[in-house]
Image 1 (cartoon, helix red, strand yellow):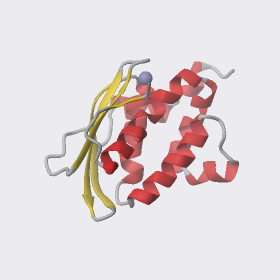
Image 2: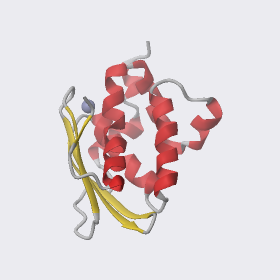
Image 3: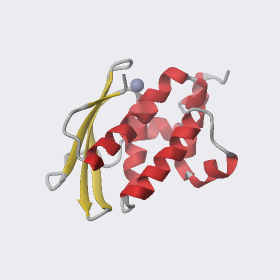
Length: 149
Ligand code: ZN
């Protein structure tokens, strides 16, 4: 098993300390709340959809370093993408953090590949995927909040 330091790599720590797109989005037309009771991570994702495209995205809330960094990097990676493209990135990200990624797909994930260490800590998978599940709910326009349980 890798050292915890490998999991909390610099990029993850940096994003958790200074999360990107960490704000409310007054013009958001999609919004969802996500909660991971195992760890206490709780985030709201705001999305401005224009047709099928994610014009703008932001988040707010609190949680562990992994969950916060994942939300921060997610907003960066899906901004400007279509809902379908975001879905595809999430599918690959999910494979990565659960240890099922093929190497060629891992390369496509760019910076998100820093989360590969999460696969060795199954309890952390929910932290890493919370923001993504919440994004899905926001895009689908579900009103209820999302729980990883
Ligand atoms: Zn967490």
